[in-house]
Length: 376
Image (cartoon, rainbow, N blue to C red; front, side):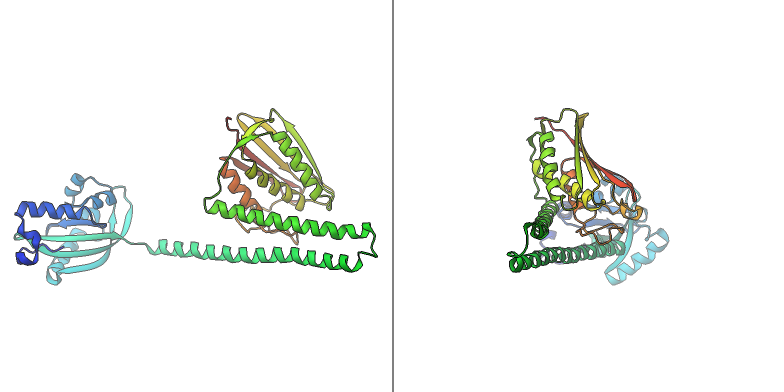
């Protein structure tokens, strides 16, 4: 903004106002710009500051007007100010980067446009200042975008690999059954039929998890609690999981404690939480071992514990346990996608609950999910 009162009135309608009204109107306009605006005296004292400048630096207007530019701009101390002002008068305007210090002590990296002018013979400098994205922030933003891009690429590769594996198994078993169905006994057909069923269930489970995590990321997964008989729900789920685990000969036990007959909980979100945890317990435990599911209700919470005697989770992997697509370094050739626990964590969070892990490598893992019991 220029303050030069030598500009003819016909080219600058604002100066047709009386001086006091002219100044008030200019201040009024400055409160509606997006930048922080400071009007400065030649000695660096503030003559005017807009509302954005006050909010930005954390001062009241009265506080700022009692300070100088030296107080808020560490890069413009008194010893360099005279040279800066002389350069401003010579060139009419300057643009440069500087640092500002807020009342709380935070240092801001700022793009500054500095203009010289006179107002009815009074020298003033007008500063328009805007916080710039620092190099560190820019690098962080680029790194986050790179990570998101890598996750998308991992997701596409994982989904393609898992679906293709299931389809290949289905295709191979179907081809064998088509050619040898007449010669083979029911006992010889059974492993191939079981394999087809297992491949279909795995693909369905994978797609369900992908849809859930996609909805959760987009904020489109609604929490809809309904009265639910938790004891019966767990019995039905264990029976279903037991059928799926027959091929590996795992045994699933279920124990219930406390009054868990009816509780308000979201059934459609609870099922994938327990299914993923039980599926992992079966998948990473020795064949013919036992997986335990314990249910208890106390202190206004429902608590689910899933225990296995499996391979455990190495210490190096625990920090990334709930990251999408991350798998333990000790899983070997056990098939998996790395999204199951990410789904579990998001759904537990949606319930306002907590998930904890107790683990010993080579001896087993216990996942404890605690969800608040809502009043009906």
